[in-house]
Length: 176
Image 1: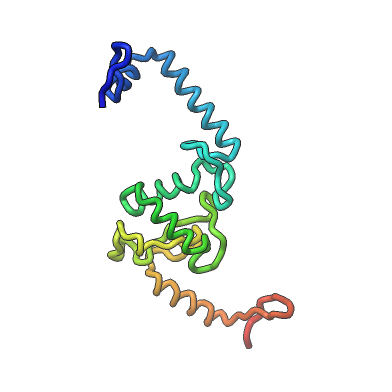
Image 2: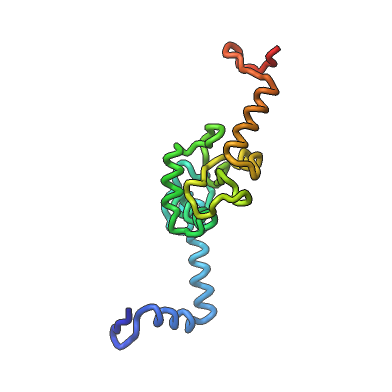
């Protein structure tokens, strides 16, 4: 949309022209103000993109709020950053816990996106139902196994090790 105000052009093209016409010193000064603002927001545990305070499930010192974190993750895993709200909804439905271990997930710390059916095994890239949230360590251990294969492997490991937790003293002992 183009309009005039006081004989000057306003709108996208005019703003672009103004940006190009900016002197290098003025542009550097503007960029420095933006960098300073982002540093200040990060020191105050605020999102460097929008300035909102970080949620309790976002690691302090992280640069993005949950909205921007999920937009970036959706862009990577679903091919469209605008679908970040779907990932945030799924994260909330999962109670912000790892699917396999029940550990509280913290964005920017131990949070990782996992494909139930890995992309290398025919899983769909743009399918929200193929995603689940796990800890980074679990995702590394899972590798390119499917959800069912990984659960079966965990069961075999537990059965072979033959360990159980004594309720009285909370120590691991071998079943004999």
